[in-house]
Structure formats: structure tokens, C-alpha cells
Image (cartoon, rainbow, N blue to C red; front, top):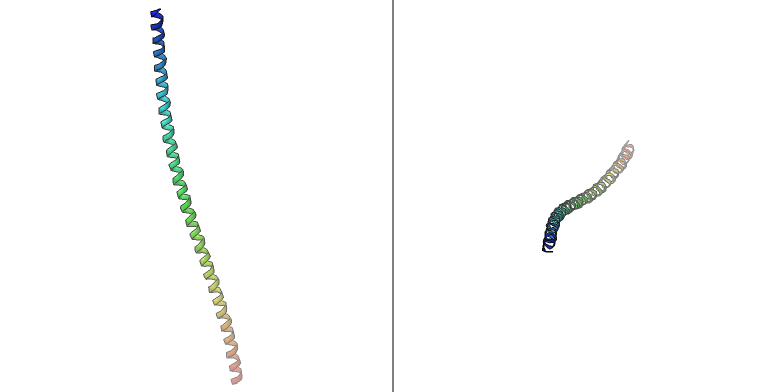
Amino acid sequence: MQEVEAKERLAQQKTNRKLDKKIKELVMQLEDERRHADQYKEQVEKGNSRVKALKRQLDEAEEEITREKAQKRKAQRECEDMIESHESMTREINNLKSKLR
């Protein structure tokens, strides 16, 4: 009877050691997966920060383009006004010349 109990106890101890080893392996695997998850999370955060910075730069570039277009339109209007003024003055000069003759 004691022999049977001793064998059962040894078998149970062996099973416990196997289970302890398996638990340790699973804990190590879990720690590795958590570490990888943290690394991926950090990479995602860096990527999101980069995207935000690029969006901000794009917005600034679009605002600059809008300003440049407005300045171009203003310059074109001024140029057209000057051409019109020049043509008007040329006509007036020609009228005055013809009156002087």
C-alpha cells in the first residue's frame, strides 16, 4: 500500500514539475507577446504622429498656395488696370496730338 502511494506521489510530483515547466514557458511566451505588442503600439503611435505632422504640413502648404493664388489674381488685376490706363492715356495723347495739328 505504501509502495502504491509512493509511486502515485512520485507520478504526481512528475506531473506537477511538467505543469510548472509548461506554466513557466507560457508566462515567458506571454511576456514576449506583451513586449511585441508594446513595440507595435509604439510604432503605431510614431506613425500616427508622423501622419499628423504631414497633415499639418499639407494644410500649411495649401494655405500658402491659397495666399499665392490670391496675390497672383491681385497682380493680374493690377496689370490689367495698368494696361487699360496705358491704353486710355495713349488714346488721350493721340487725341491731344490730333488737336494740336
